[in-house]
Length: 482
Image (cartoon, rainbow, N blue to C red; front, side):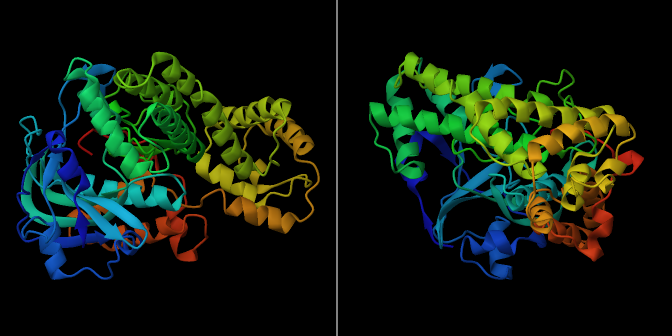
């Protein structure tokens, strides 16, 4: 890898230098050729294994943990920081630079009495969800590899230590700006330095002046809105939408107790540390705005309140616009800028998801049946999913009226196949792959990963990966240690 060190060199008071602790007897558990290509890498090798395990220093790397703060479950925590992630720098790839981080590489000054380690299950889950979201077209950080070991790590039970090698366009979070603001009593100097760096690195089309700051915040608001809309359309619950887990470039970031929906439930909670449902699936759009408001407060030293409020008002229209665009593609509804159609289409989509919830239907598999739907036919595999067929027929009549004539039904169905995935990362599938990997068998992990790389295609050999979960696997709730 070839590194530059812009963050390390230009923002020396935003991190602490730290070296990884290393892993004894490391071995590859997973490797993403897709992510590797972003760095110009080909096949994994022993030297790279030892470097990414933290056992050998990588040439050109500078090892550090970033400092930030954030609102966690609504309450402000004045100092957080990378407690188990160590960044090596920005690695050059064929199309730009990617932050490389070792997640689970040992304690840092911000570990808060923790061991700084990840375990096999959490490392594998982050690897799988990063790559799954990417192949579903959702903005996300990436995962290059998972490195396993025999290092004993205590969580609820004794487990084995592992490292996820994370790639990110940026590791700058909303929480970086909050720390800059609150730790200085609202001083503009530190906030401005961080904003200027962020703009130069990730928004180079903008200037670091009043107009540039205004447009930059608008773009952050809109990118966040598009991200949350993508989560809602694909049926993804992040689980821990604290401000320190929000990426300034609008990528899915810092995965813990996430879940893809099985049965559609607006109030689905995937995190057992969230009994009140603050981060439930249906709450994510509102929390996205709440987090942006926290970011806006931290930016008041360099952007006026009126400008910030005007930018925040862009959030809901952008989220609705992008969500509607994605759902129209899933259901095959023609795009239109007609404002009346907008509200009618949202009502039609809402009526459909309400039926799914009332009748206990699987979100992903039900949508997949649009790939075989002939809207003019009396019966369909989509209709067969519904117990209350009268309710479905009523909805279908409205849907047909909105849909109009389809010139080429075969092409229309193929387009639906490319919008509604066959395979998603269900928690029970991840758990099965993890259990096997913990016993030394990585074949189920590799098989699941291959299916997730082409989620819109149908593969006969992966039929069992496109089913509703068994009773024990329905709506699994995870802990933050996952």
